[in-house]
Length: 115
Length: 111
Figure 1: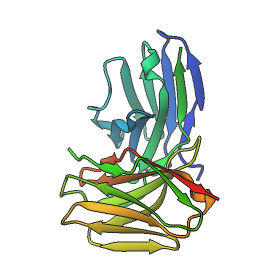
Figure 2: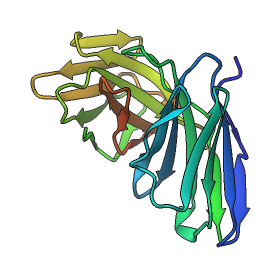
Figure 3: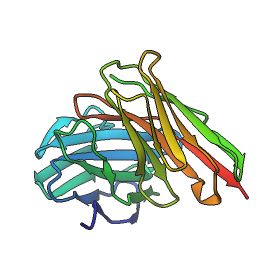
């Protein structure tokens, strides 16, 4: 399996622009998580889905952030409009829901820089 | 919700020495405690984990201990090597399928 695939790996954009980050989870995994990593706050959970349904989006910073999972093999995280404080590495991770244990598999991350 | 605290934030050891990283958690319902290693420019990867019904688990040079009563768990790396240098995260998972991460420990192994 190719693992969790994220794109783009790097994104540089200007303040006010729309940013869309993409994630393809591991086939057969039905839980998907979006995390944001910064030096100040570490790994923050933004939102997670079970069977394509958003379960907890309390970590989404504000209305500028939105996430969708239209099917089991694809999810997007959108920031509109972007701001410099959104600069961070965004990770997508997937997990085989229903298992007490079981590894949370992370993608390589999308490094976002908002100028 | 769960709160996971991790210490220290940075740790430097001489090659061959041991390294210990400690975490505490708040939710007694948490039942799974993984440790992740993150190398520069990559996503975190699982290195070892422990379930709440086990007190200790070992895999070659790494081991994890869990004290459910005190709600703390620790990662032990023996005979450290330069390739062990990375950021390590502890996490706690509850029955609600959510993973809560510590703030990370940057480990440097000095050759």
